[in-house]
Amino acid sequence: MAKWGAKVSQPNKDVKTCPDKDLVFSSDWNTPKILGRASGSLTVKDGQNNSIIITHNYGFVGAMVYIDLIPDNYSFADATGRTSEGHHIKSYSFVTISNNQIEITIYNFCGSERTFHIYCLILRENVS
Image (cartoon, rainbow, N blue to C red):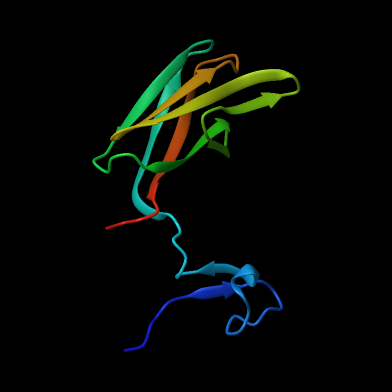
């Protein structure tokens, strides 16, 4: 039986013969798999914070969280995702991962109440 998969090489590299260092992607690699997706919005008054908790049943996982800390401009949020204009912090977020939960807290200092939009991918390397 043939082994099937996918590979993508860098420009000007032959995907059939190039070494792994010249590949952009290979399905042979143990890359994170998307287990689930979540999205939502969170309204935060100026000068305050608010949190949203995403509950799942996958145990400890990785997460990629994107938040529009600047309207219509999504940023990757990690443990300390921040955005600023000049030297003034306008809003920032914290992402905390625990067993079966991802908590996203947003602090709003942009001068008025604002609704933030959140997108989350729940990831794990080994899916069994």
